[in-house]
Image 1 (cartoon, each protein chain N blue to C red):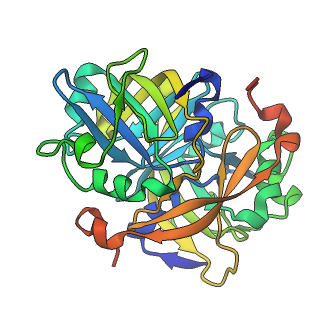
Image 2 (image 1 turned 45 degrees about the horizontal axis):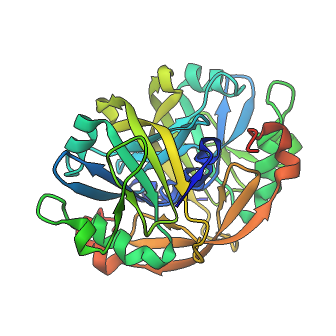
Length: 180
Length: 180
């Protein structure tokens, strides 16, 4: 993993990929699959929706830290597997062959197998809507990875894979943040 | 457009497509391009991030209504065009050849050219984070439309088009809501 400039980190989440979110509760690592995320500003901040039905939720609230990791299409069965078992009775890193790596700003682990990782601190919990607001504090990307296509959960058990990419940067120039 | 059962409406937004959001301020229709959205529950509720920098924002706050419309890849220049001009000085429906259609529950217009439309009521405004929480109250889909691939904004001026679809419904069965 190489550091990615923080001002580019929102471009990992803006396309709406399913993500893995890791936590560390002081004793063990855990990871959950999350599809309900959005960017909330370019600094970057993010929102995700989760709640006490996820066993990672307590660690997220108590440590106020997590890592958003970006799996690719070759990891689909990890994404599904992580999302259909519980950290309450399973070491998901061991079960799915995920390799925890230390970050710089948070104690929640990066996931080596993922395309990218964003270290985050919880800046707000909006309990009424189960929305967690996160500040990205460091970002990492694996420049050597061949497979870079992410997955989009539909919610009916199917996933859409990234297809072709269309460039409209010229037309949008006035509205784009400076990513240099 | 045909009515789509509301319990399926979240599957339109969960994959993270760029959307058009229409409003009606009592005098005129307006529409904005939004990429920062997420599902917040299956009923369905949604969150989106916007603020006073969008000229639709006042209508959204005052009428507490909007329609989330789902454009497809053939509409990319409409998506970019709507996102790079302002309703303050432009009739965007006229400029981009969009056809407003009446919904059932809200006065904001459906967009005929889109694949799907979700009528929404604003249920909360979280000003500190520019998050608007919406309750979907009716949903529509065009079953006759040939092009059904949506777009995912990356945020750097490029867009990723929906590619192949992978089915993992069997493995996820225990976690899926009842969509019948």
